[in-house]
Amino acid sequence: MDKKAEELRPLDVDQSLPHQISAPSFKGTGMEIQPPFKNDYGVVIGDSRYASPESPLENWDENTDPAIMSGEEWVHPTNDIGWNTAENQELLEEKREPQAYPFMHPSIDVSKGQD
Image 1: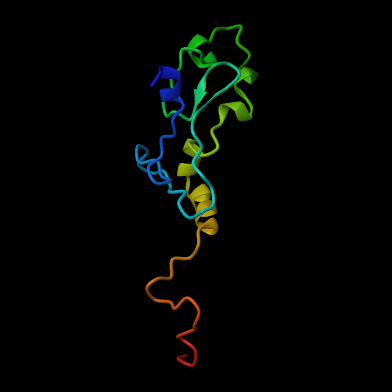
Image 2: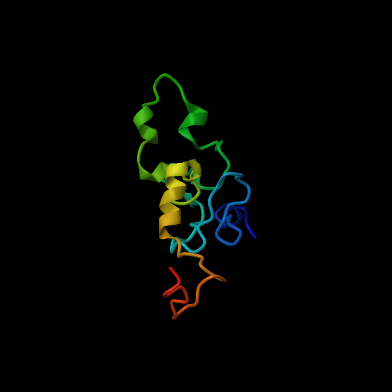
């Protein structure tokens, strides 16, 4: 496998990112973990490596406009540290199907008349 293909491979294991201790699982949410991508500046986004020789951060000087690093091309949709916050993990939980098994029959309300 060439280096370029290796860099852009998905990093997930069963819809989770186990290399990030607080990262949520996307399993059952309808959202698929996306592979890393290369932005217009040649920086790979979403590979969990936070230093890149092509990044403006690594080549910063007094002439660098900070706006160069704004916009969607700098944010990975699923491998972003923002998913580790409680608020964003709640968003994923709201998308997840309820896990009622083994306490619930799939088509019969077994609790009817029990309350």
